[in-house]
Length: 248
Length: 281
Image (cartoon, rainbow over all chains, first blue to last red; front, side, top):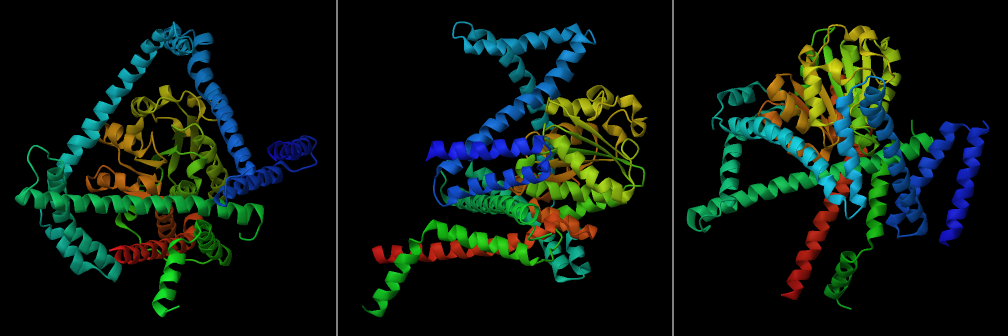
C-alpha cells in the first residue's frame, strides 16, 4: 500500500510539474490543488492513521527543512556575512564566521568541545538581552502597574456615562478590575509562599489563590481552543473558496 | 428492560461515543456558517478599541513601523489583522515601514501591500516600504531602534536605503509614531515591549494569536501596550470598527458555532462523569 501510494503521488506530482513547466497547467491552479490535497491528506488522520497522512507529513517536514535552509542561506548568510566580507572587506566578521564553523565540530566526538565556545557566545549575548528585557519590561513595569488604588473614582464615573449594556459591562469590569487584581496578586503570591504551612488564614488565602490560578488556566485554555478552531476555519475557508469556489 | 435500565444504556453509549463523531459535528458547525455566509456582530473590547484609537489619533503623513513577525502557520488569525492594519493606515494617509524578524514574514507583508495599495493609490517607496527579514531577534529590535539604515541597508527588493524616498530623514524608531506588531510568538510583541517600549519610549500595539493573548493582557493594564488584538476575534472586532468586513468577521460565525458545540460537549462529558461516579459510589 505504501509504495503504491508513493508511486501514484509521485506520478501525479511529476505530471503537474511538467504541466506547469511546459505552460499546459496554470501554476496557481496547480499550487491550489497540491495545497488542497495535502490538507485533506493531513485531515485524514482524524479518521485514523494511514499512509496518505504519513506521506503528507513527510513532505511537510522535507519541504520545511529545505525551505528554511534556502531562506537562511539567502537572507542571513549572503547579506549578513558573505557580501560584507567579500565585497565590503569587513574582516571583523571572520570572528562570528569562525564561531559559526565551530558549531559543526559537534559532528566529531573528539572535537565537539570546540562548539562550546560558539554556544557560550550565543548564550551569553541572549542572556544579556533577556535579563535587561525581563527587568525593564516585566519586573519593574509590572510591579509598578500592580501598585494601584483599590477604589477608582474614574471607573465608577464611567459606569454612569455608559450608553448601552455593552459599555456598562465594560465599565463595571473597570470598577472591579483593581480590587480583583490586588486580591488575585496577593493570594497567588501566598499560594507560592512555601516557608510556612498553608493553614489558618494563610491556608484560606492560598485556596483563593488556587481559584485565581484555575480561572487564569481556564481562560488560557479557552483562548487555545479559539486559536485551534481558527486554524481549522482558515483551512476550511481555503478549501471552500480557493479550491472549490463554493464561497467568495 | 426497565426505564432506568434504558436510561443507563443510553448514558453508557453516549459516554463512549466515537471521537470521530465529535470531529464530524465540529466540521459541520464550522462549514455551515461559512457556506451560508452567516455574520455575527461583535462587541468591541477596550484593548482593540485602544489600538484603533491610537491609529485614529495619528496625523496624516506620520510613520508607522509594521513588524510582521509571523508565518503561514498562523495565517488564519494574523493575516486578517495585517490586512486590517494596512487598510486603516492607508485610509489615514500614514506611511508604513514594514519589516520582519520571522523569515517567512516579508512575502506575507508584500502580499498584503500588493492587494491593498492599488485601491488607495499608494506607491511603493513613497507611501510604504518593505524592508524584509533580519535575523537576530532582540538584537535587531534594539538595532532598529538605534539605527534603521544600519540594520536594513537595503529593502526586501534590494533597493538601497538611501534610494527610497519615504525613508529620507528616518533614522531610527524615534522617528516613527507607533509600532504595530503582528506577532505569532518568539520573537514578537513580548520582546518588543521588553526591549523597546520602556527604553525608547515608542508606543506599541499589535495583534497576537489567541493562544498567546492572555499572556499579553498585563501589558495593556500596565500601559506598555496601547492596544491588543487577540486571535480571529480581535481581527473581527478591528474590521468591525473599520467598517470593512474581512476574513476575521467572516470566520467568527463559524468560530461561535464551534464554541457552542465544544461547550455542549464539555457539559455533557461532565454530566456523564458525575452520573457514572454516583453509580460507582
